[in-house]
Each structure stands twice: as structure tokens, then as C-alpha cells.
Length: 365
Image (cartoon, rainbow, N blue to C red; front, side, top):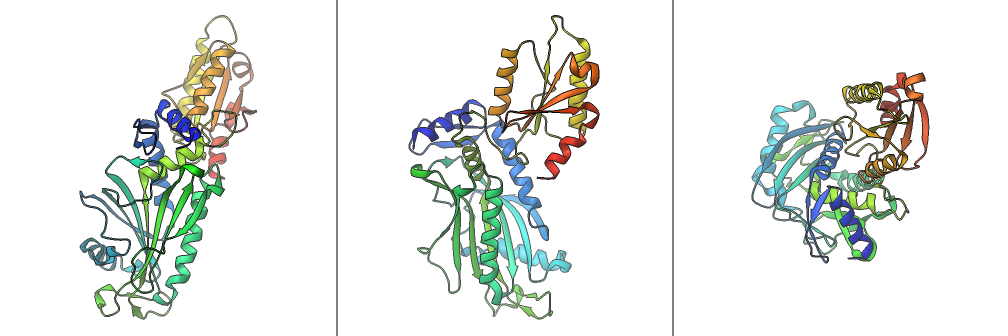
């Protein structure tokens, strides 16, 4: 592993995102509090992705997810979910459609060349059921959509690539690719696996009607598997390995576990109860608007050095925006500073515009 990535691993460990073993070649990584909060956001955005979905219950197992990239179609669990789709969701039991499920088990991914995740891991699984004669067309479309999805949440979009898997033993007309995040000479991390397999045509229990013409047929299945914890660690490393002089963690502002922070600046010699009350009020307003707020409440600084240290802490945690309130300007005219983590510049906002101003920033992304 390169010195640069070792430095990133130590940074993320020091800030409470994950712990890693002392093995510098292939360290074992376990998510900590901040990392788990980030993984939760990634999981929520996966649930929102591709809305025409039937979301099935989560389940756990001590066994690996499937015998192979294509063996899942022969499993009892797949058959059970397919029948649930037909019986419980008849309006969506047509081609094309899709199912989502979450499965906690041992990893069956052998492509982690940078780190090994703590076991077990959470598999985010999406099964696309498409017309058999359009299986390959849909497979290429899903590849592009998935790659763009990862690029969108990255600080370095060029890091992600579609990697074919020609060496896999696969049935006729089947395909498999990985989407990987490359970290140069250190290696890569597989963030998503995509596989295309056709269901047997002779089994009528695995048939769905074509949404356009109503004729039943055995669909082709495109399975997407995201291992949540390794993928989260890859995105966190991506946000740290940005090559800038700043120590900021450049997390996508939608996925960042904490969207904003509140910092009070005491410019007068004596402590101001009014500033305390205003910071508490702003924090409460943001929380009520369901914005994710860093720290319980707010942070107060009495001098520029203390404020700089506090802002550096927020930046290392990947907080996109910090609201700066002081006991002179903010108390007298309601104006505060909204500081950006990425540019380290601040714009003036009136307190009455909160939280709508921030909500619009995150909504428009």
C-alpha cells in the first residue's frame, strides 16, 4: 500500500470513521461511529435509487450469499422472493421490474486488494427482471447507470471503471462485470457486482408477463450486489485521497453523515448568554428541519485560534457547511456566515432564511 493511502487510513481512523489493523499490506477495516453513519446514508440512497422496486425484508445468514455470481437463480431464497413478487405485488409482477433486498452474511468477494472488511457484511441486492430478448441491452444500460451513480458521489469520478469478468465460469448468454474504484498502484476496491443470467424457459413458475403485450415469458435477471461496508470504506478513502493541501474529507454533501455544524464566535470579552441562546435556537431549527447536525448542539470559540481548530475538526469529519454566529453582527442584525468546507469561503445569510436556504442546497444537488 502506498504511503499516501496509509496516511488516509490513519486519518480516517483518528477521526472515528473506521479502525484498521496494523497490517499495512491488506489491513482489516471495521466501521466506527462516523463510518457507520456514513454507511447508513449510502444505504438510504440505495433504497431511493430506481424507484419501481419491491423492497423485501432484510435477513441474515452465516452462509455466503450464493454459490457463484450466477448460482443465485437456483437458490430457495430467490424462488421464494420471486413468488412473493407474483402473489403480494401483482401490479409490479411484469417485465421490466425489480426487487430489492438486504442480506447480512460472509463476503464472497475476492477483489478487495486494499483492505479486508470485518465480517459479516451487508449486501444490498437489486434484481432486475427484464425481457429475455432485451437482456443484454438492459445489462449495458444498468452498467452505465451504476457507474454514473458511483461517480456522482465521488470526489474523483475518474476513479471508477467497469471491469469485465471473462474468467468466470458462466452459463450461456450470461455476463458479469465489476465496478471498481482504483487507487493507483495500491490496487482497487470492487464497489458493485453486476451479473446477467437467463431463467430456464421450461419452468412456468418463473414467468412474468411482458408489460407491453402481456405475453408471459421467463425473464432475464440482472443482479446488482453492493457490499455496504467495503463500498463505504472505498468512498471514504476516495474523499480523503484528493491530493489537495487541505486536510478536509471531501464527502459528497448529500451522503455526508453530518450536513452542517454550528459555531459561535465570542468576540467580546465577556460571555454572552444571548449568543448561547441563539446558537441553541439555530441548532434546534436545523434539527427540526431534519438536517443532520454535527455534535450535540453547537461549538463556541473565544478566539480565532480556537475557531480555526474547530473548523479544521469539522472539515476532517467531512461536514459540508458550518454556520458562523457571533455576539456582535448576528445578535445585532441577524446576519451569519455560511462557510463551505470545499472552498473555505463564507457567504452572508440572514437567520430568517434558515433552514430553507440549506434545504434548497441539498435538495438541488
